[in-house]
Amino acid sequence: METSLVILAAGKGTRMQSDLPKVLHQVAHAPLLAHAMRAGAALDPARTVVVAGHGAEAVAQAAEEENAQARVVLQQEQLGTGHAVMQAREAMAGFAGTVIVLYGDTPFITEATLQAMIAARADHDVVVLGFDTPQPGRYGRLKMDGDQLTAIVEFKDADAEERAITLCNSGVMACDATLLFDLLDRVSNDNASGEYYLTDIVELSRAAGKSATAVVCPQDETLGVDSRAGLARAEALFQDRARAELLELGVTLTAPDTVYLAHDTIIGRDVTVEPHVVFGPGVTVETGATIRAFSHLEGCHVSRGAVVGPYARLRPGAELAEDTRVGNFVEIKNATIAEGAKVNHLSYIGDASVGAGTNIGAGTITCNYDGFLKHHTEIGAGAFIGSNTMLVAPVKVGNNAMTASGSVITTDIPDGALALARARQDTKPGRALKLFDYLRARKQQQQKSKEQG
Image 1 (cartoon, rainbow, N blue to C red):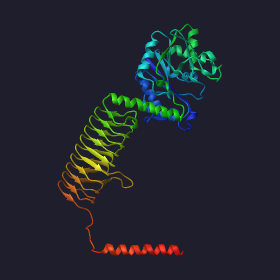
Image 2: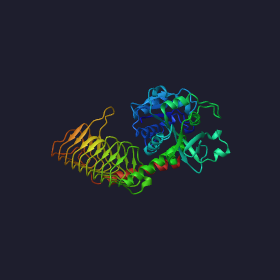
Image 3: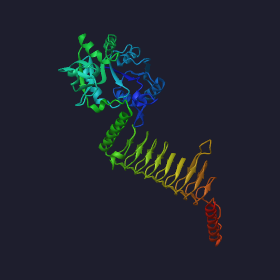
Image 4: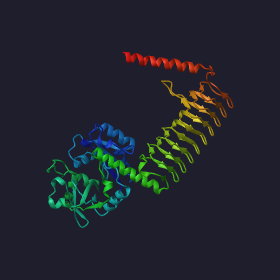
């Protein structure tokens, strides 16, 4: 049975107190919408339709970045979930399989749950995803008769007996495509909100002699985000899940609650991650590497046996080969550090390549930007860059070459050469004492003038 997705992403999200559409707020550095689309993508859907409304242009861009084949349709007025799904009718024309309705602000539905819904579709025309909770609050209630779902009652329209039901509606639904749109044509807005509820198709399907049921999942999977507090809860839930998965995969997190991961972080087994490490998007860390405390990584690749930190920053384009060392207060950006090379202290290496076995002394800076353009620094294998060297790009340091500490290097250094580029020291005996006496007297005069003034 083929499956297609309709993802509702038209809401403004007033409680977010933001100009940004609700579904574009991020969890783990990815929009809520992207999380929802990925959940559905696990089913290999024939079609994916995103219903946009508020901030439609930005929502469409985010949807297309996640899935170039996704079709975005517009809900001009937000008249309820049933009305939103109706906007996908044209995009679903000719499709005869199962349509699953997802929500762009509900990021944690699992593939297993969606597969359970598809399995239930084999015996039922309509399948609703529910969750059981002792505190159902204002969620819609699922009324069951055995395995048959007889109705979904919105909280606003529920009586006291119905509000006592603890099986709640997540909003996620699977239905035969033809039946879905036929039933939506019959949905009325005669309710407390004056909206067209998608949930009404359950009673309509029953009246038409069709079968409906509910599949139950853990409540966390149905978490919808409609406020900043909800966004924080979603972030915490993602991080808890991601950390637990890494621990299961053989990663050592010495203080798991202090490590923050992105939606696409990849970490190999036998990696050690110390406390207070932050992973931005696009990070891969290979087996056996160590990421020490208070480091920040984004858009980078760390190979086997490398040690990063503490207090290191790897920015986009940083490529660390095997057994490299990047130490405290070192920043690497758009640079390749070859096997066994070391950048251990207080250095900035940007737009550069560092050869195998090279040692970069403390305080070294690749001066890569001239105010208009970026330039490349090439450092060969086995080189030694003395502390506090400024490498003014574009410049090349040869294999087994050396720079003297405090040098400002502006021209290429051949293989095996030593470059010194600093002023000769001039020492004047006794001059410091005379200068101290002069400065001390001047300070005393200034203080005296202030007191008299």
